[in-house]
Image (cartoon, rainbow over all chains, first blue to last red; front, side, top):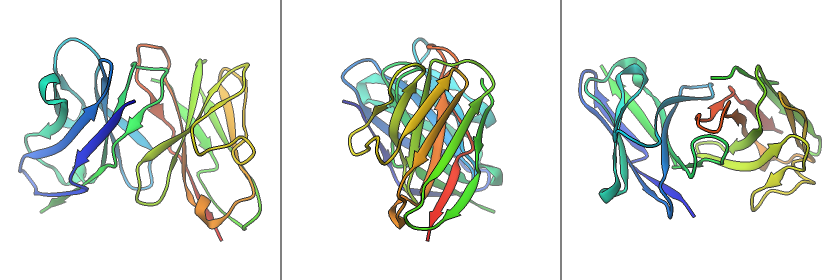
Length: 114
Length: 114
């Protein structure tokens, strides 16, 4: 079985500061890992994914994440927060990239303070 | 990625009634997934819909309560039956256009039960 733990249900940063959202996973097989963002009254938008290969993955809107197998982590970072980054962020894991169900973490709400 | 359209985008329903949610994709896909997002919570998989076969339901979800149809490779419906206030949630469908591609989501259906 797979599971995802997101540390911190709410993270608040100042505009221009580093964003760090934490995600740890549990998987009995090599995982496929994803970060999604949900803006108010919208569905989920894929930020980035890790399947195989390079462990540092870059996504949209300046976000990136690093897969660390030894730490079972997939933390999301952005060097400089923008007001438009305020949203709910979900980490998810599956056993395959596409046609298998996703298991989501509980989500982290990011607030950006001017 | 696919363009996924969900209808309705939101609805307010009376207790005891049923609502059918539609999910239309602009390309043919093997699997379609239905998730529920209860207020302030993460996403939970309801069922996986494969064209030409019965949907596969997750623990805690039953066909009588959430019947699903999958008549072709671009369309699926989820019905929420005999609704109660506990069914107030966002219901989202997702697809992957290929096995090696990530899932993308529709904008969701925001359902409130009075």
